Image (cartoon, rainbow, N blue to C red; front, side):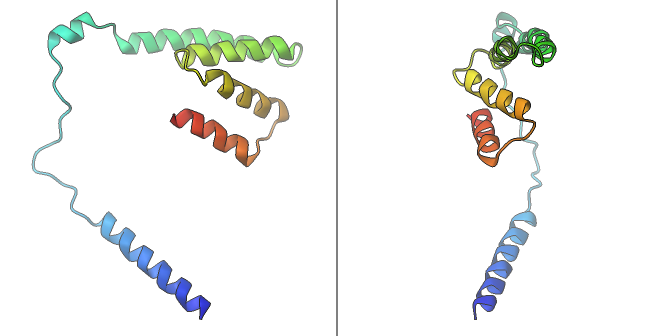
Length: 124
């Protein structure tokens, strides 16, 4: 009896997923992003350039982390924390993310709660 209930549940879920996958997603007109006035674009800093600059600076700190992690773990952690803070634009949880990443790297493995905590930070 239990087996039959599981089979029915799987069948219902499969049919539901099938309907979602087969829904008509083609539209006649493409969906466009809202138009931004040229004055706002010209006056704003280029976000792509800012991201590239943060990435370069963060990479320098990551290289320092890699150099120091075997010899001076405390200085290596500070470099990783700085890299995380720079890359994520001083997000309040960047230090927590760096700590989880450091523990994971030093141990060589990660537990499921650590992985979930890291993913939750990245989604926030």
